[in-house]
Length: 459
Ligand code: FES
Ligand SMILES: [Fe+2]
Image (cartoon, rainbow, N blue to C red; front, side):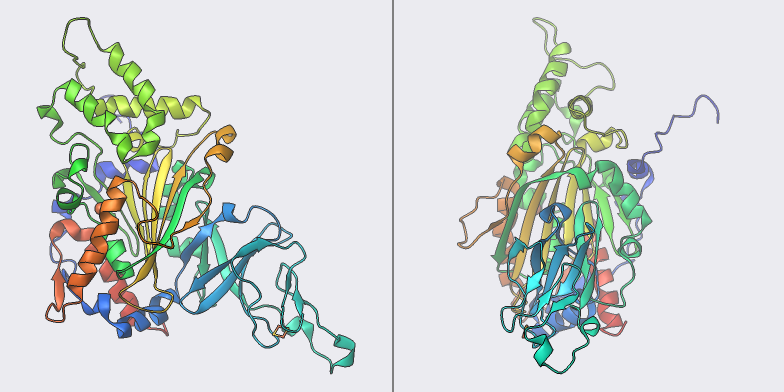
């Protein structure tokens, strides 16, 4: 290496420096015409159930949902019901929520029972590891081999603080499903240490893929979120994409668009407006203002030295504030201090993540199997010093009446848009929708979906 070569930081977030831009991704690589059947047909929904939902790893909560031995919660997928429970050894396990006697569900909702589960029907009991322990009037009955009648176990594992479940007993490991690259890239954010500061679930009138699609492209920002244009550069030559076998991550720099056309004072104003949409920036703004002020000279318009912009000041302030409060951001690049990376973990997990915060959008199929409906869940996380976590930790909120929960501005705009799109998709004369090149992550997602549907239930 010669001394003139730039020093690379060897942080996983460096992928953005070399990953393809839109122009580098071969056009024609993906099918851009997506059949509308996929959004409205009960038959397709049924195929998805068999080929995807019953076969893949899916996020069912957070490890922190079950902090204590004996903590349990139920996860429902269509008409299937599973119990997740933390055992005496501290491991979270998953079981089919059905008693081995005559199938009664063992629990509903969530709770804690250190002594295990008691079926209310004929009072059989199971321990936290699923073993059948007690049978009512056992000595009066013909012998029953208890060891053959444990609860039916399903695979549960954790990554980045999320609990994943896979209903398929033949499933590959979660590590193989996500892949080492994904785990490597996520590790430096310390998602496992982030605390949930918002957790809302609501039924909405659109197919689950309308949600995934909506969060996989920035092409709708001008139409639906014009207020974000000042800070989200959607100049396509600046976005970077990493399309993996199943999953995808992309990044559009967090930058005042066409920064060279704005004065430093205007750039600073753009950053000040950000907390409307990215509330956790509030904690960084005071430091940001201090650094900006250090560049002010009395009586002169604000000016920055070469190489300094509002974006680089925001990055510096973010690293300083998080580090000063004892949080580890060493594994993240400067760009990750300001830029959100948009992740799509197949099939239904979208996450936007930046140093110190993340928001996840999960889209679950309608429990009744209606392709025109789904349940979305928005979970926001912050990486906080221990002494602040209890004050800011949110409890889950289930929206019963539409409109009862006011999402932050950009999310509210998406929430209102998605049912509108679904109504359009229901028109029978519209047999396909057409993706544009900027929607490459959407196209990639549908290509993975095609693969799973083609492989079918027996794959
Ligand atoms: S169904 Fe559970 S004890 Fe009979
Ligand atoms: Fe949006």
